[in-house]
Amino acid sequence: MAFQTALTIKEAIASIHSKKYLLPSIQREFVWGVDQITQLFDSLMLGYPIGSFLFWEVGKQNGNEFVFYEFLRNYHERDCRHNTKASITGSESITAILDGQQRLTSLYVGLMGTYAYKKPYFRYDNPKAYPVRKLYLNLLSKSEDDDWFYDFSFLTNDECSNDEDHYWFAVGDILKFNELTDVVIYLQQKVVPYLLKSAQDSGKEYDTEKGTFATDTLSKLWKAVHSDGTISYYLEKSNELDKVLNIFIRVNSGGTQLSYSDLLLSIASAQWDQLDARDEIHQAVDDLNRIGRGFNVNKDFILKACLVLCDFPDIAFKIDNFNHTNMMKIQHEWENIITALREAVTLVARLGFNRDNITSNNLFIPIAYYIKHIGLPTNFAASPKNAENVRKIKKWFVSAMLKRVFSSQPDGVLRPIREIIQKNDKADFPFEKIVGRFKGTNRTHEFTDADIENLLFQKFGQGDTLVVMSILYPWADMNNLFHVDHIFPKAEFTERKLRRRGIGDITDFISNFNYLGNLQLLEGLDNTSKKDKDYKQWFETNLPTAEAKREYCKRHLIPSDIDLSFTNFPDFFDAREALIIEKLKKELQ
Image 1 (cartoon, rainbow, N blue to C red):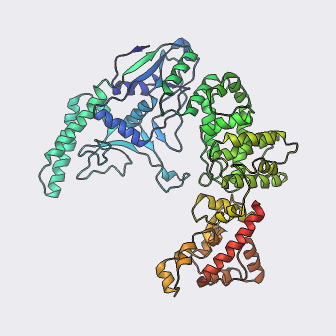
Image 2 (image 1 turned 90 degrees about the horizontal axis):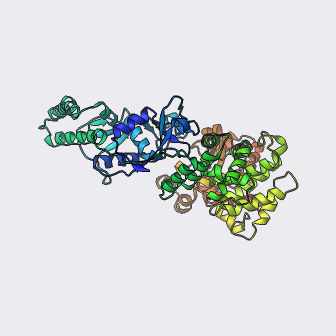
Image 3 (image 1 turned 120 degrees about the vertical axis):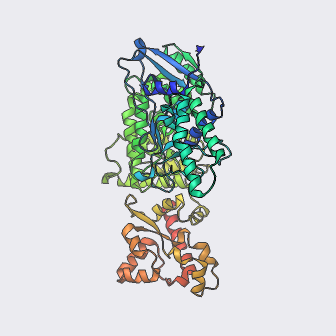
């Protein structure tokens, strides 16, 4: 393996764009964020080394023996994270990247592509949450961030407006400048006139420092892309897959950038002979995450589920467990594994859970194993004949989640539960046997009186609040649109409003209004009608008959013998907490 003459970034980008450089199936996907990309470009501008690369030359005669993927150009956090499979028909030779794909993809995205990531506070399924951004460089001043010298930023079209301190240059446009003189011409025709006009508009003199900074900055960018031999690489020419795979693992397992599951996925990709492991696993992740209101499973989860659902004695994440024999069994069982996982995630979604309130993805695996064990019945979650088992699964799921039984070393829970399901004679979900197995251990599913009282400290907006609500509202189809609602409106619990009502001691009001005792589940329309109305007034108006009032109090655990006036909130709160404790003990003990 020889060290080759260094390439310029322009040469490397041209080879990526012409699909001369490809990614082998053993490579993971692109995972760098915008900060890592901008820091890479900043390092290039400062003349810092960006590390060596490892290329693999695959001759035409052996190219069809392997699967290759194109580089990602327009990254989209939700819709475009996966590389497209490359067609190598007619290719004389292929150069595959064994080490350095994150850096090369970052250069390709920054110079020729786009990067769309989610805006804060937007829902994951909102298309407007992912605006398309291109990489820009500010030619007038350095970065305000101490970790960067140059001001690189991914911006939308609307965000790249220029002002006194910013002239945004689209970084990819540097590829159009074949000679350094093209940089000079651009500065004379674009930047200098902009600075002159800016000075004229503000009544100031021409800023020579900014002009000099712009000249120096754009010249350095051109040099970094067009003339510096930045891409220093080794070239491996062997077509022995085992050797190449070993090199890949040796190179990548020494650092922290490549996760262990990425290495295991690389091994799977190299050993499956009927299915494309990379495509199948990535597709499974996407499909499962789109169920219901969305989940957040990943490759690690899929690989762990494979080990459990294939009944391998050892389910630990280690290379020995991903040997050829095991990989062939996983490939053979793949359709059944994914069917079971899909049914399990669908069931959990129907119970009203999603990515925002699931504490561990490992909770899906015992459910999937049970569904596979009983023969993969279709539409398990919705079938009326499975209602009792769904109830038991929900009870186990909620208990396991609230007790955090998967908080550490999940194999210590997955193996015993799998064994119990294996030995269970009936098709029933063995909830009682699972609880009994972990009784008295640090994985206990049981709730003491103190545990239940601690659940009262769940607050509005916390992840476990909806979990507890699902226990208090067993009749609610949580897959429908239910809102967690403040019984006594949150807006009324300000010091000013409480004083205006003539309340002297406001401590109990301020301290308790956000806790479980003042929360209920309401369907979307009911919540809209209630909004910030006085609770007693809403209660009397919306529930005109005595029967309607009794039914509402029963369903929402409202104390029927308590005055519902706002000033009586402390007494109401204590009485409702007592009803909640009684309900939780009945369901959990």
